[in-house]
Length: 80
Image (tube, rainbow, N blue to C red):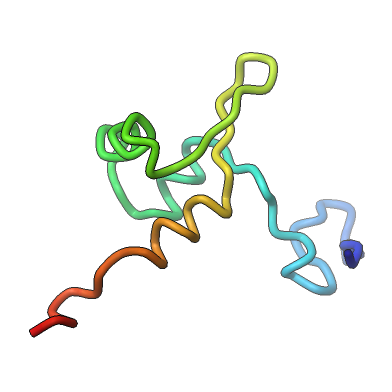
């Protein structure tokens, strides 16, 4: 596993962006990443289409589960 090497003290930019990608996202970040509303997001969560964990009471979304969900979507009109 490669390490993230920060280019600045804020660590918003780094060498090897893939290494810096977070594995757990806040609910707000996950909603932004999916481009859906809060209600739709929580429906996906309750249907277990998206995975989340609780850490000290904070809900964090498993980024890989978002990637799997998006990869499993049927493209609009692909079967026509």
